[in-house]
Image (cartoon, rainbow, N blue to C red):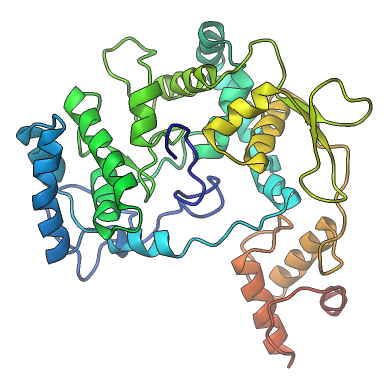
Length: 386
């Protein structure tokens, strides 16, 4: 998350993984600022009084003015901003990523995400083709980024960016980084691209349809519609999608060259990766590295590439993955989730990815039959549920 747009470890992860599902309403402790805020924000993502934060903002104003931010911009930006305790909680509680490629693709290229992607591509075909013609980045690749970052615009985030970035800058764990993002966000407001009240995003300040952080927005966002604003927040995704293509173009995307693909025979040229031992291998080109400039993760880049192929009509991977550490295949895990759900233990869905809700459901079931509540799956547990 500096010159590149790497956000893993800072932001929400893949859209649709639950990190950007914002629910609940305002409650005790919320500050009434007079602003209209999205009703879906949880209590801990609404501003509360914090004397230390207020003192930090007062000192920050001088630094911001020294970097060209006007007093009127600062007044408008901080009029309804405040300390967001939930931002700190989320920042400190991010787990280390240990997801396998199989689990990652189960979510990144789920049947629902693919079908929604094909529908989004069809609705926006003319715009996406025009973007491809201008920047040389395939329309289906741009659409795939849109799908992973915000579920095709459905999950853009409702957290006020000024409040989020100022809270993280004040907290200090990565204060210099987030103060840089806050200054960039203020420059965006000052330029007239968006008002402070409309500048919303994830809890860590990633914004719009394709989740640009403020510094990346300043460096790469474009006004594709020609209305004088680089508007990545509106219902019209045109500027956001074009900005993503511009980012990839400037990151070294070579027109006419594939990102790579599953290695099913002779290597057509390129580096070979096998991210999960025993699983499929992939050949990748320099365009794979351009995708990694957007998010510096092999799993992310494979997810974008494979989702883009699926959106364009391609089929699932031909290779298979080995059983997991518990001896279960993906089909076994799906069956386990289905059987738990049928018995009244909510797993949150049956995608074969055993996340926190599935683990809690397993624990509850184990407890109900007198077993130690470990939350660990097993072939024996699957048989018991049969």
